[in-house]
Length: 196
Image (cartoon, rainbow, N blue to C red):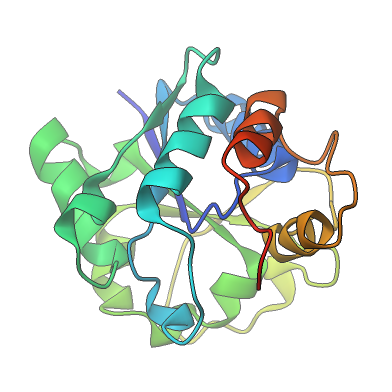
């Protein structure tokens, strides 16, 4: 069993998340890839994040027809700051996974700060790090003080961000094609992102 872990606020989940997940699933030959919405992201404690249930429901809408994609509400149900090391330990213990069976997807922007995460040395003992480049940053250019044997995910560079999508909604602009259709319908139905 080969398991991928893809964490984030997913506020909202968008098409770039989906494309990255599919490229990683294919490249790494994953049996399952879990989207894991964070409860309180440790590096974004000062930012307001949308209601956890809305973010869970939007992920459900996005992945409902994808047979290899799954939702885990582990970090939401813990109701604490979401530390990746605990999530990885949870998956290792509950699924009986070895390091070579567990893959963590992170963006190159997060890889820059990886040494500041909680227990980064333990994280690289638990899983293989899988780095996705950003339009303005390649993970291969990052001088990482933590020794890793990171895998580079070949995915298109897309300048799509959740914050831009929220701004578009707030300003009455279209988000068509930026989010999966079910997510767009959810945002409209529940009037998400209408106010700052």
